[in-house]
Image (cartoon, rainbow, N blue to C red; front, side, top):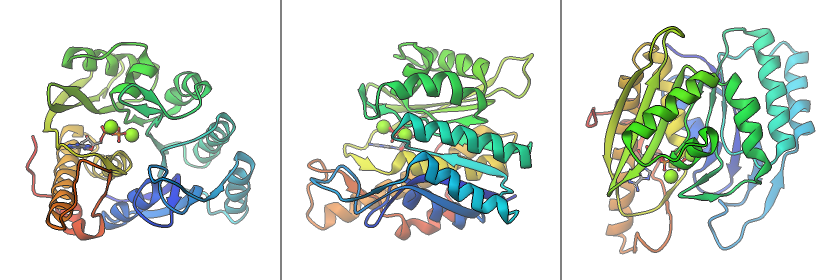
Length: 291
Ligand code: ADP
Ligand code: MG
Ligand code: MG
């Protein structure tokens, strides 16, 4: 089971975040992926400096208009990640409507990238647009703990809180929700929730992931891409899709850590560029190591 994915994310010349992190794995899983680069930067913004260009909302709509004029706007999936301004996010909402007018079954996978570990890294006025306008039209949502808190206004400190947050998000729109990590004493807890039927309680599950003591960039973007890829192949088994995604990702993070360590790098001092290309076998055929 494959599809055609329109992926609106950032692009970095060097390194792996945004589309650089998401496009290759989706292609490995057999998807046609059409990337729109919301920014083009020399490198990710965690480095001391970066240079580049930012696409504005009108320029996004221009690209979509070009596709539409040639009848090229049929997609099975829309994928969005980091979005830096309200005006761009509003244009994305127009794109969602447009794509759904052409394919009413479009799956919109939204990673509501807003911040991490209590820190917001987008303008504050984006939060309410995500909460009120974007969440309601998303099919699948993949917030981290902090983002789930911002969207639900619920403080998440436990597994139970995570499950409650998923219920609140389902009520607002998406039938699939994955909180990709909740930090609980040294471990990362992933909570998945699939509401198959509006009348019934969602099916929920958790995966415990030992926290690796290093900071990686681009992992959230990769995670959401893998969740899209696998949940489309197992549409009724979000738990299986999440196990596959986590297994791939953890194999990749271990490889990344090993490569840096054996090169004599202090993996705690800076963020690590993921070994995406070197992990292609783990992406194509993950060994199921997480349940
Ligand atoms: P985001 O990057 O959006 O904050 P997360 O922090 O939840 O997203 O990371 C996404 C996924 O990447 C997690 O579900 C986990 O599998 C993996 N991951 C990220 N950082 C680590 C880490 N330090 N140790 C182990 N797994 C990690
Ligand atoms: Mg995180
Ligand atoms: Mg994220």
